[in-house]
Length: 399
Image (cartoon, rainbow, N blue to C red; front, side):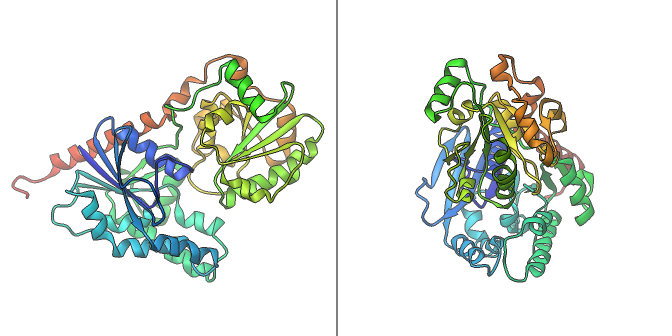
């Protein structure tokens, strides 16, 4: 089986949740199939045009219109998803870059025009790879652009076309699957729930020496509880960080409980310098930073899909504190997390929860089901079964 996929960002190295999902699933699918991924990247990208990583063939095509869409959003004129129009006009270029048709063609929402191609020798299975119910995500956390109601309707129309064009839509959670059925009338046979996961090739619980070295590098004392919040710079993460910095941690001042912020969301800190705050920024060696922490925080209150923070924190050996909203998509992991409402977060941190690294025990066995390799392999197997069923149903003599 050959799988071609198309995404509108560079997925290696994966620096945010969507890219982590795309690359993680591709890496897992490569256990059962030949996988080629077309990445549409900005003109200024210096990454190689062709690269093979963990069994995945990556092809990068530069596009100037994605930068234009980003600027239009920054100026409040139009949302980023207007880039989909430019991708639509360049679909033949993308098809040529992917090469000969594959058994499966998968595409993210902004590149879903590829799924509507009328090529006579197109893929036998067309897959819409969804990271969220984007219509709902836009309505709940849309950027401050003009005519937001109009853009929301256009987003819904774009997502409806993607679902209609696909033989299979892959979603992150049961909640997203239910919403896809409600919004677009897609039946269960054309939906697959594949959870968000963690990179099992990179993440592991710290050994005592690793933990000691990581904490020393950040200047964290042995008797301090270090809680980490990691995330990309977008609305729900900024709101979550505001909850921590304006309500939770000020009430803990003097209790030797500190906050470590990792990722591009640190831009939202605006130069704050409280003694309990460590602003790290983006971390190429993320595991070393996570090994310094005692607990991982997921105080999100909005957004779509699910948060890769949860299984990633657990895999790094941390205790996890999350909102009820933040545990969506991970019901089997809930017993291994501290699930707390907003008003309970200070007390949850005062309890200084300990993860498996500090306790010297193995991570929960259920976590293995959320490794990207296992999740991607599960998706590839589902595709194989759909192809086999289609072959069985195809009438004799069909071309």
